[in-house]
Length: 385
Image (tube, rainbow, N blue to C red; front, side, top):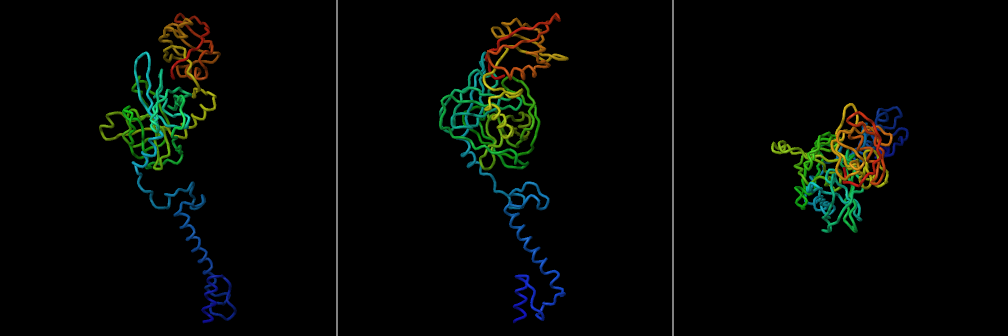
């Protein structure tokens, strides 16, 4: 009995038994391996527990950022009904009219603040003379103005007049998105005014696409997009891509064409929410950049095209607009503005992004006869370019 008792105490405390007790020889074989074995067992138990809970330290097994799904059980399937019910009241329908063509278009928006800041796609409001927004949470309708936009990122921020107490969307992060994640696209599909929730999975990150605007047939390259396997449709642009918890992780921007959809290969594309909110923060700062325009849009009132080797060629000066009043005519080549080189239509737009209506700019022109001149033009307010 005494020998057994001392041996038990050794295994639990690590104290050596007194001389002469069983297993107490200082050089016996048990002493060399029992303590390390106990320590290894404790480490394995600890790692198993932490790994199950997704709490492994970053150095464990050479891993980077731990996730709950790395060593733990798989997440349950998304509940589409519950997610849609939580998100839809925090979205808005966006309706625009475009003069003088008389065209109208519809899209979606994500409510960012209770007093009416709404995130949407730039192409939804591009060229709009008037914007009307219907909040899905309150059922109220508001007139909207454009606070700013980034046409390259296809993001715009609206302000609703006299809005208050609107349900606000929960903004997540796109940094943690992984291929295979379950997501849902929610927006005003088909411009019907009723939100459509379209579940799918993330199929690619950082995708580059060439998107065509169905309203004016213009094309734009979009990069860094989240691709999803879901039948996204017209009208969902500006709507929310949300995760299983209802957090917004992207802004719906585009869908693939009808041939691909007919072949059962429907896909949608979204601007990652981290990038979209970066644009929002820049707009809120009040500081424009070459890509981010803040406030009302300033316009020359010209239609231009790229000229080789450099410049923006005037194809038409719109009657009654600033360029027409300043004497610009078809064929004039715009090569500079306020001392800045204009190498293309895009550089002309980027330079105008930094201007406001009623600003006076000085255009450097080369006429069709090769004569050079500089003219002063007072910019007018126009629709988002």
